[in-house]
Length: 329
Figure (cartoon, one colour):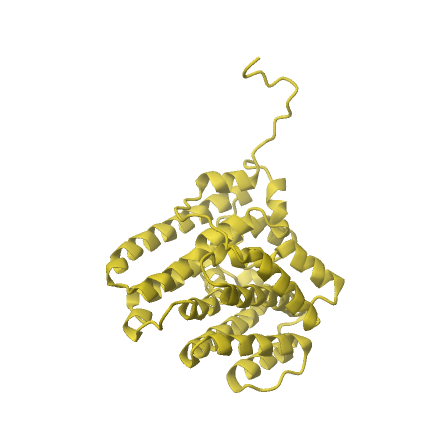
């Protein structure tokens, strides 16, 4: 009879359910219609540069789904821009995982890898490793699609990301000294989201004016949208990262600082994200009347990472451990 649930198995709420219930996510979830082509393109590109020759890396890419993340964060860009976004996401996952593995042994051992990247991005030096060759090719694609000024901004933000990985390695080596403020500062560097912003400039029908690009509100939105996006991913990755001994995660930072349960720490992190999203909404309403169509499209591209990271993080196999922890202790 209606309402009779005898014989059905009750499933207890998980940490993912707790996040879904508490997180304020006002932005619409969308996917790019060119996602299948981006998926094929990124797989072929990784294989061409030998980045998935190692079975462990190929498995990581399969569990990470870079083309899906590109599709969800960049739902309105054309196929050409989406291909670059997907390849850049995949490259950064490979680069980040390798840097983490090496940096855990010794931050100093990261220097050859990081210095090669800086030399490519700053001086156009020829690569010496397959990973460096992939970065050089990615930079070539960016310069072909972007204006010189946009490509220069892409390289500048990419160098910032590379430097951030050394900060992360130092923090991992001295976890007892890592406070919440320092954790979020390092996280903002290693997020690797801001290098994508010049691609959203390039996706517009015309270049943004300097007044729009450097407007204090637009610059603030850039910072806030990156934080909200990666902190949201931190909610779902916290279980995986706690089990693997990783430190640069907003929820885990709250857990260390407050000496509380992971569930309580996640709720604290959710509140900080909600406050950030609220500020984003207020600033968008403030700046919208001043933006040209190109400026509005650029801001929309930045904001896409907030909802895109949420939708991707809650279902991607890489963070599946979030469903193994109960919502309450």
